[in-house]
Image (cartoon, rainbow, N blue to C red; front, side, top):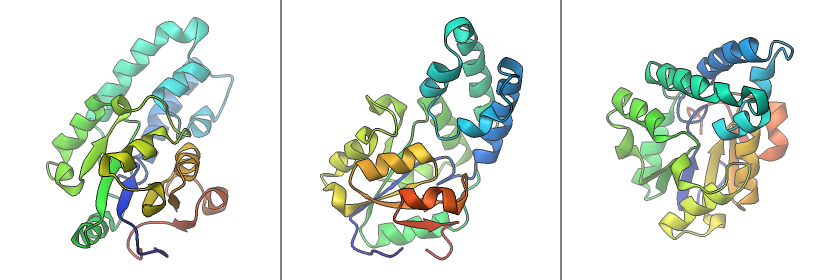
Length: 207
């Protein structure tokens, strides 16, 4: 990273801590082909959207009755997903914590999803000083609410926080919060996310 004087590092989850985005592409590809066959590639367009945003945009009206079914499918899918850390993440976060940097997960994932994460990685909670999930926010990304809440949890000013994000909405959220933004090119191409962040990395090995 270019700047070294941060007091808090705030991480999105999917595509940032865990390399799970390809698995979500498979899941949403199946749902989109079933319910929106007229819109090929929709699973790519909804990357970075929260479940509520996806439902509001694509599963409202006549498809509202399908939301419960899709949620059940998603919960079952997430319970058996593989949660593999992005390369270099564990060493990177240990290095941050050894320097006294506060660490937090700031994710739109809900508690059932997080329980699956905790089962897969019993050490996960010990990597972070705070874990903020969908239940903690009034407004979803790209609104800055979630990142401002995380900074407030630590009593640290936004300009002393660095955000790690991969999605367009997440990057916009970090920017809107007035924080230094590092984009992970794990979900979208480097050139696509570069205008929305201060620097781009592919993983944490050289960070």
